[in-house]
Image (cartoon, rainbow, N blue to C red; front, side, top):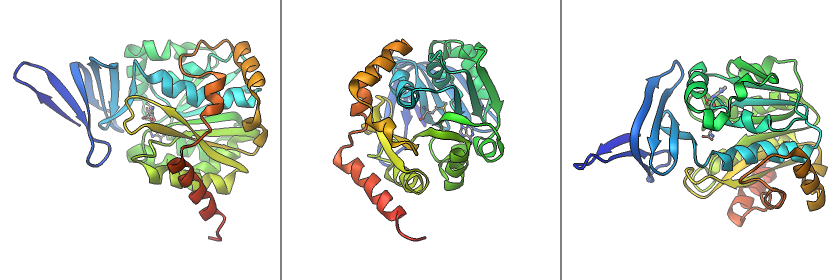
Length: 300
Ligand code: SAM
């Protein structure tokens, strides 16, 4: 991440998550720049996307396009499952995921396990437009801990687990391991669903491949679905999907529409047609999932 100031005073913020490619934001003001015990947290007001949060130089969330990510990672598993009462979010410090989950009135308990209290403190104060004070919802429980340790030791059980993590570098790396996924599966009630942020396959093929390999070994219905988040460069973003109940993916449009109407979610990206279409994979992404699944069938 680097800043460039032009002679007319314009400031450009360059982000280089992917080798040989950079995303650039026109920065109106830096609102916050500090090192938490876990990572560097920078927040800036940008012309194109409103307030943007960067952790270790990588975009985490922006005010204008967060719904493309949060709605799809929250509502697809919850609507597909149809009877979700307990949800676990790993990561998700900005609160945007918790806000979407808590739109579901049938959800009785949401546990969010975030490693970095600094992100929560900042989000409470400055990202209310994203999290809409979900932190004060009586169903919300916050645990400040490494998600890997929580998954390894918790005795709780959940209907849906959402891994809303950073990329697999720094503190987020452990959230892409086989042992973590195995622990998540243990925490799922029968017929529960695990969903994960799995990066942009155009740039992060291995991230998706590794998760799909591990999911294929763990779940009878393993795969991914897609969203598009404008600030995550490279086109489609993959969201991992793992469950032992294959009926969830076979729901017809009328059933999805009935559940969506009953939930009264007020969405800007998610709807039943998008839900179904999100599981259709372009060839180059389907190949990654198929190759990983085929490899998973080989003896270790
Ligand atoms: N939408 C984002 C993306 O895909 O880039 C993810 C955003 S969310 C803010 C990611 C959160 O995961 C951060 O707040 C970070 O502190 C948290 N995190 C990273 N590693 C973690 C771990 N091992 N346990 C729990 N939380 C973790």
